[in-house]
Length: 416
Image (cartoon, rainbow, N blue to C red):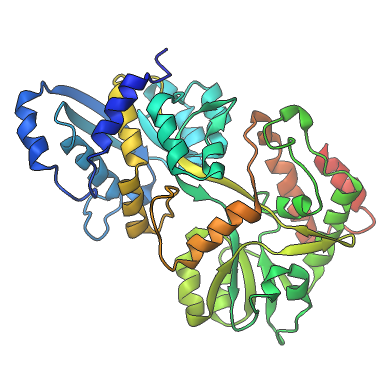
């Protein structure tokens, strides 16, 4: 089957990748010397990646993606590759690729929650052989699970995708940030917001329903299990958010307002992801801290807030004309050295467990979130039914349209 790599093919992939140096390095003299003895095949590959990977940066005048691909080309004298590049963010891959799968990139990056849609559209190749062995050996279970759909592996993860909590160390202690209730009960002074949270964002609001013991598609892979948030516990979670939304010590994050409040000393804590790290570090300076999610007490029971966790991965289009080369490139772009360069140049946290990151509070927070305070974002096609109702619930909470009196009715409507 063209979609499933044979072990022999993937062995050749990782023989090439095993020689990989930093993406800015030249191929070894041994490789250069052997190229004369190797029959060279002309290959064309189309690669899509985010704009940030193709922008000029220190040491990479044409961006890091082109440098990686050029390095890959140099390390494979058996291929003479002409690359064509396109801009497509990981978050947009599902929409862009499925418009015309035949004309889409041979190799592209995507957010893992898009796998069901991409697979059903015939846009992602199934992986096997040594590629899967390498994924299993070099990643934590959460990252491995993030690229498995219907029992098969459909991509190579290269960074995690989740959120956690930033806080101001001058306002909260390490013990206080373990509990949202403790944080909200503290008096931080006039005009200071204790906690900011994107309550109207459906990628975040689930944290409170999970804290109340709710489930979404069972373990996240059972579409028939549906959603059970219309239970007594789920209604209690809605009521908790009703009270949170109207608390003067709370604010719903809007367009970077929380970062500005951090800078002005007017905010205690805020939930977001690694993409905000640089700006928040600059805003908080020596008071910067990041941590896993806190607990909340809902209906008298303490529960753990949980964020969705997933990955960003690299996959291959089943329509790629040069499948072996495309598979080998995907493995290279998600490989250990490429992940190191991504981290060094863009602070993209690696998934490869062999990469040591010293004294990085973001990496520590993300690791703790993945092991203690997260749940795998469901990988079922019916997850598409979740986003709008959950977002509308959040917006109604922020607008004050949901009260203790109508919480049960509104929660049942969202669940339905």
